[in-house]
Every structure is written in C-alpha cells, then in structure tokens.
Length: 466
Image (tube, rainbow, N blue to C red):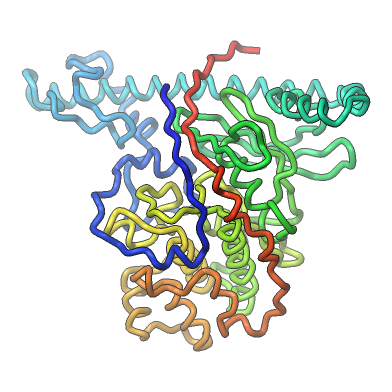
C-alpha cells in the first residue's frame, strides 16, 4: 500500500481564529473514517451517517441467502453503509423485478455479515492470545532488567526501542488484570506495574488500514498517531488535567498503551447520571475550568484532540480532579482547515456541516460549549436552544449572568465570533477559582517543523488459535 506524507507547519493558537472561510466542497459521507471510535451518547440531529454497515446490514441473517438473485459486488452494494443500500448497477431492479432486488439485497447483507464475523473472529483470536500470554509472563522480568542494567547507555536505547515491538516488553513489566472496557478498535485492562505495584490501565488497540503513524521529535521511528499525540500533549511540565502515557509497545497489527489509572474515577456521562442527570453551577465551573485548561495546553503543544466530550473526561469522585483522555481521534494542530471530522458528531461544530470544513481552535471551543451546556441542562443543545443563545434570550432559573454569557460565547454560530480558547479561563465566570500558573514554556509549536504524517500500509496476518 502506498504512503501519503504531509508536512505540518508550526502555528500559534491565535492564528486559528484568523482564517478566512471560503465555500468548501461537500463533506465526506464516509462516516466509517469519520467515526473510528464508538459514541457513548446516542446521536440526535446532524452528523449521524451510516457507520455501522457491517452489523446493521445483517438483520435478515436467517432470510435471503439461498433464494435467487445475483449477490456480491455486481449487485451494486456499498460496503460500510447501513443495510447495504443498492448501487447504480442493478441495485434492486433487474430481471427478477422488485422481489429479485430484495433477495439480492438480503444476499449481500448476509455476505457482509459473514465477512464481518470472520474479521471479528481474527480480532478476538489475537486478543485472547495477548491475554493468555499476559498470564504466563509476569515473573520473567528480573533477568531481563538485570541484563539491561549491564549495558551502556547507547546500547540500552537500542534495546529499549527494539523491545517495544514485542509484547514481552509489556508482560515483563506489568501484570494484566480484569477488563475495564472495550470499544470498536480496542480493549482496556486493569494492570499493575511490577516495580512499585502502581495501578495502570493497559489499552490494547487493533490497527486498521487507515491507521496513521506520525514522526515526532526525539523518536527515531514513526509512532501510531494516538501514541504520538499523547506523548506530545504530555511533553514539558506536568499538566494534571491530561492523562499520562507511562509506556507503550508497537506491533504490525496492534499497539499497547500503558496509561495512568486514577482511582476512584468515572467519566462525566456516569458522573452526571449519578447526580440526577445534571450538575449545579459551582460543580460545572470546577469541571469546565479543568477541561478548558487541558484543551488549551494540548493546543499550546501542537495537539488537536478533536473528541472532547463527556465520555473522554474522567473525574475523581473524591477530589473532583478532571483528566482528558483518548487522543485516538486527534491530529496535529495546523493552520489549514480540516475537512473530515473523526470525533463524535454531537460535538462537531456547525461550520463542518454547513461548509464542509473547520479550524481546530473554534471547533475545540464549540466542543467545550457543548460539554458545559450538557452538564448544566442534562441534554445536548437543540437548534432552538442555540437560537435563543444567539438572541441573548436563553436562561435557566438560578444560573448566573456570567454563566449564560460564557455559554453564548462558546456556542456562537460563527467560528470567528467564538471566544478564543486561550481566553476561556480568564472569563469572569471563573474569577472565583484559584488558578495555578500555566506552564506556557511547555509550548511545542516551535518544534513541529519536523513533524510529518504518513498512512501506514501493512498486512494483518491471521492468527492461529492458541
């Protein structure tokens, strides 16, 4: 498979607000690429698309496999869209008439379902192999660590990098425990670091043909984008609002990330559910200040998260500390507009749907506004809510004027009129919060001259059953 390489120019946060919007092409309808991660909220409104073609297309699994009709590729089905809608060449109206078209569609759906089932079998075989190996290896670490300690510094760096292409690197340093969760491309396990018994989260992610790798400073080889962006977001002085990457390994068909695992914590979807469906203004203020700081620091370090939402914000139930997680939908922050949206549609900016493109800064501000509105109201902003906000007629009994003003500034329809990301934390609504100094010296934008992005082509080998 060929590779595409894109050079990324450095930028400052303020520049994303100076871009002139022109009439764009129609946005891509390939939502399989736009939504690689499952949503944790049920979409309502714009941005839905047909991301579930594999499973949803197989509803008639007991029906039309054996009856007539010409299935397969000539039937004109479109892979990845719901139900395998018929294409231009013979999609439903042929010699067999209307009934023949229905049978062809059922046959295509069944073929797609079988194909998806085989793909999942291969995926779970690799996952079971990973988990079984984890149970066998935890005691094998001491000899390997002693051997590494006897080598000089230059040799150790080579060994460390080579080790990150083997699962033994993880198994010799961490124990793997219970499953914490799973999504479309990966599974998260609880784990412990053998050296100090630190609780960690091990995220196992399967690669696809669309997996991108990024060259970043201080790393000789390209890294999977999620790993690279998490490293960049954490480079420099410690920012407690951004999840820390403790370790990682990279393989031809998967990679493993070892992340800090704050406890006790839950994401904001669960948190507001446990608090009656919405939060009061004071609790929302504490959460939003931390979320805005995390987003701003990501931009200062050249990272566009692109999926800031309730499900990607963890909160400690005892201390109310918030952490931004999951950079899998992110990208390098750049001057030019983005023309695809891989985050969750409910948090996507309106200019993407109307113009087919958007800029990183204003899009991040819109996502933060959606989070804030949902925390306060218990539901996503409707078109009518947005209309009232623009007219300065939106209010909720008990909310302060400053709170409503900030919401209006974050959810302005025009991206150029939204509040700048770096100015959110200085808004009057946050004046009662004790503000720690932001380590602006951690900015990595000046170091991004050497950053490039390439699509990784690889062959996923089928795994034999263990």
